[in-house]
Image (cartoon, rainbow, N blue to C red; front, side, top):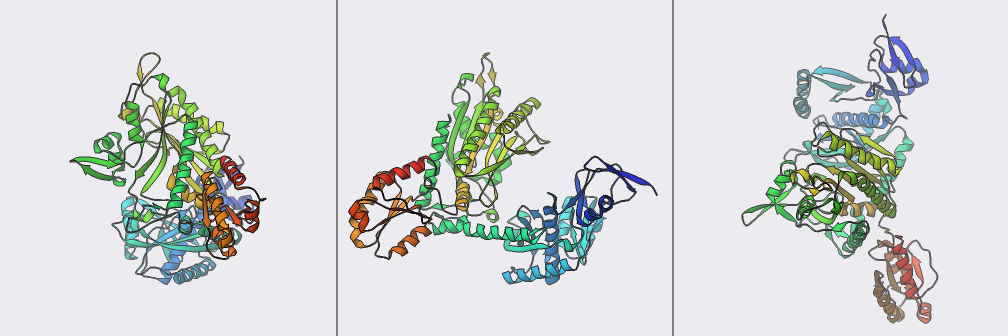
Length: 636
């Protein structure tokens, strides 16, 4: 029998019989590894455990402890769920079921919405199927054979997918009486699905198209062991308690109304004040770093959007209107007005860099199915800036933006991760432009001293970019800051500057946001702090409470003095028990409660009590105002 030679990650080689599988490779290394193996990698490509290994290949064994394992476990568990649904509801039609960051989902076409009780039945059936230890086998068919198979099964959605793929051959996975269209890889058998939970139900349009049928989407999660699953479910419950939509109502920050329209937030007094505090912070920090504050109009002529390319590439996400028989586009981005400001006068190299900053409100037509509280809306404000500089200034400008992001995220208590996306296959701009911009971004990442990842070929067609994802207290990732080089707009709008040699040259342009959408960032802040905002950010910093009506005159005096001193203060002089008023203030998550009793009236002081129950020493109202001002100045 002929043999093959394979290479292992440690540089060693092994000789095996021709036709050997990944599992055979694992067994040749050790019985323990063969028992633990769930999949493999052949020349860097993830494959099933029983995939044949070609001669000369580099082979890695994937176990439950491997970084790639979780996605495989979750993908296989989504198939397990689909099999359970088909067993319980034979008329159900299956569509797609991928692994996602938090677990997995599967979309079903069923004749009624699933109930929580039915979800429990589905999960119980999944456990039975897992216990049955059904082997998960890969099969390959021609495209026509696969279409005929799924047509006979009545799975019209799978037929549509295969027809759209147009591939000569497709792969299927079979486990017991269930078969699904899938690239894989998958676990060796259903018994490896050991720790899973179905978490929620939602509606989802087939292929995200609102004109297509509404399907039932069942979400779940899976891990390699019960301990990890339990820890995740505990975080999920905590996330529900911190849900910004729930806290937004309870704290009276914002609301949404069907009468107004989906995706348009209404800011109540405390929420509007929170926004104002955040926006004032942004203005101050940008001015400190040499940015010029600008303001662009809400609507611009359609022909301007055509020149920029937005009309051709982004039209479906824009709103349009007509004024005096002239077409206008409501801005989905702030960049065009900034281009016009640059073009409004002749620019010299001595003027650069120019940094235009705008807290610009934009409108984007997001599909109804993806709207989610403040995290995904149709009207939002971005802390948008555009930097125009010479090629020689680009490195310093990128480093300055990363330092800006680092300082701001530190103030809010967020750690963050960075990713560099490089030139895609289809792009504009010269090789020299791309090399200069990519090197500037890469150099800034290296100088930051922070870890980063590179996504090869994932940049925009008009330039490379850095995406910055913050991590909250539940270790969730949120996309906020972006630094994007752009070779398109300076060319399309013919932006130039006169260089030291008297020649006109094209400036380099950088789009960047620090917080991103203000609405989204506030949603993240609410969940990160669970509504317990630091003193500097709290829309209400203190509340004055009376024990009885006798203290009301002095309490009013304290209230007036604090308000005049700039403290954001409320009062509660109602004829209610003190414990009730304290509890209400705690539910409103107000940092300081100032209880005014006879002692405070006689001494002319206040006794601040922090929301966690800690009391500060008695002090004068003026001293308390100074204390709050110090905390705010230190962003505490």
